[in-house]
Amino acid sequence: EVRHELGDEGPKDAARQHLINPSEEMAKLGRSDRPLFTHADGIYVWDDAGRKLIDGPGGMWCTQIGYARREIADAIRDQAMTLSYNSPWYFVNEPAAELARRIAELAPGDLNHVFFTTGGSSAVDSALRFMQFYNNVLGRANKKAIICRIDGYHGSTQLTAACSGRAWNRPNFDLASDQIAFISAPNTFRRPRGMSEAAFLNFLVEEFRSKVAELGPENVGAFLAEPLLASGGVIVPPKGYHQRILEICRQHDILYISDEVVTAFGRCGHWFASEDVFDIVPDIITFAKGVTSGYLPLGGLVISDAVLGRISGENAKGSFFTNGYTYSGHPVSCAAALANIDVISRDRILEHVRETAPYFQERIGSLRDLPLIGDTRGTGLLGCVECVTDPSSEQATKLDAEMALRVDRECYEAGLIVRPISNMCVLSPPLIITREEIDTIVGILGRSIEKVT
Ligand code: PLP
Image 1 (cartoon, rainbow, N blue to C red):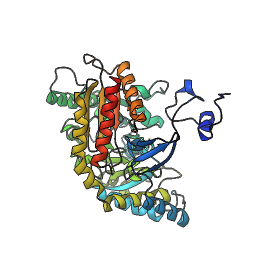
Image 2 (image 1 turned 120 degrees about the horizontal axis):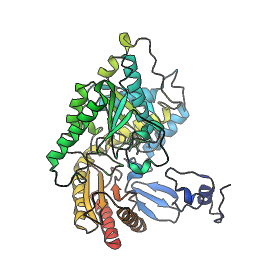
Image 3 (image 1 turned 120 degrees about the vertical axis):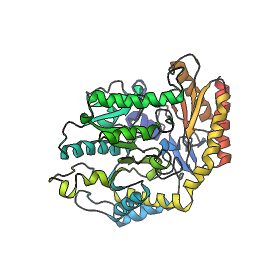
């Protein structure tokens, strides 16, 4: 039995004794000093010590319109009292139907059909299962390999975790997945020494082309990529990267799945980033997080008419897409999403992000002169500072990650959450953030970096 006597502190003690958290440090099970949040409002959360904290990471890239918005609470309550549930296997509900229509309107190109899931992992998992189904219906039973990127993150199901290339997610999860292949992350900061940015872009594209050739194009079903690698450290690819990869996908009839779990619903100043920021119309887009601003769990994928047309109607060959969840298209989650989209539109939040992002990026960029900081980068309201103690090292070191943790602790004490990922401090604040609040964030971060250096 795992029990540790730490005294009864109410919910915090209950959490210690009984709750398993994501990213649980097993040596600390029962002893965790993880803060407990009590309430939140706007861009602020409060912890159980009474600290008021700016939500620097936007929860986990998701609190777009901020906390405690009455419009969302009302929509949730009203829908819960009207129709709290229906089986999506046999029936439809109004909020799911209306939300699918709205998302189809907002999504690029002919991406017009929406499948709802319960979050980001299930969205990507469903997109990959759809790829399998699609190629089987098309009679291409071998065309199922998935190419993804080192440092990408796509979720925590067996399949999506296997497609996530971050080394630190891997230990102790190693069930065989021989249909998944990796290519490099388009990380300009960590590109091979002495290689120009233009040469690096060519290298990345050629690496993808070679991987397709090595696997055999007839065996490759999908390329899976975030428009920018978020959890991998806000890695924004060189201009033209996505178009050139998409071109190769088109040549070989490989589905391009754009994982917009982080970037959709305003993070980069647009409903979706694939087309408006990165100039591509993929075959499938996955989304979650910002679709409800984190008020309720919801995710999904949008599939193009062109792709669906090949395996539906006369082309369906009697097939059923038997993939889904008890809570696919959950009416209350969908009602929250509709209210969220209304708030984003009414309050001109996308415009606000587009106006504010250059300032945010400039202020984050100003931290690059600090001795501990090796790189600063980002786009939209996503930013990252990377702690580098040894500029001669080609990889982040253990000490770099320790320094990021120390920066994080200083920030927390000063009233800012930054959530370090390895040696990187990542910011993706609620989209309603003002310039003054950006100054406060960057001020705290800068002072914290100076303090630990
Ligand atoms: N895809 C991306 C790009 C993500 O960043 C995440 C989560 O951070 C996921 C998928 C998984 O989403 P969820 O945690 O909602 O299952």
